[in-house]
Length: 356
Image (tube, rainbow, N blue to C red):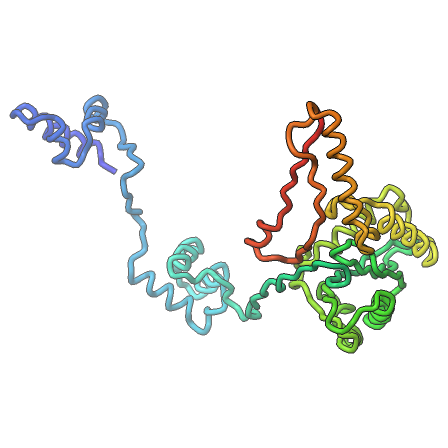
């Protein structure tokens, strides 16, 4: 900052230059000021310099020698694993004061030393699961386990649920009172038998739970020829279809407001939900056909008939339609964890045309 005395002296020098015939703009340029700044200085010569662009040097700035001494201590064997909040008091106990904790942190930031200063596990890079897709039923499954409440606090029933991602049909489920890789393996064997799954036909995606990666489950998948796929640890978005289905289940209007009395009661309610979901629920992601219709290959004819109905309605009252009829084209491919560019291309372009 420029002191009042220096400002007064500068104003006098500029005034003398102007009196000698120089222009004010050129005189100000010589001393490194704008004409507007000079006008403010001449109007209030005793005011403090308020320019924010002025580079200030702190009076108590640490010298290079002091910074080197701080770094040497911070990186020494005795203090190398400690944070500044530990270093400064320990030095004070020895009668040594180099700088405050804030000064240590500022120095650490400049030197790139802001990190854990104690031994920690090296962070592992987790790669995104490979992109998968299905163009027909029984090509890509997803499964997970969710809790169902019981009357006993702290105890739950466990719902094992397998979903075909192409048709959205629940292809298998069961409720047990424990979470077990052996029980999951039994359920997979039953699904493969009922759906006539051949080796290397289906990919089964799940998270990293113990039931999913247990030895019995993995050996069963290998013997059946089912290809396993796993999410990244603690990333629920890698298994979105199962998570979405569990939300549908637990936000269903008929979901019990109280805990289940018994394992039989829980199984009875879930059996009703699965029947509704597979055979009555029109799923928005598959053009509002039921999962069972799509799983059985009936959705193409149903959607074609819908298109005909809309075309007939438009032909009867063309004045009520501003464009093409609603898009009832069959969804031919379903993606799981697609790459970003692919995800943008695969995003359905909803062109809903409503009647006036």
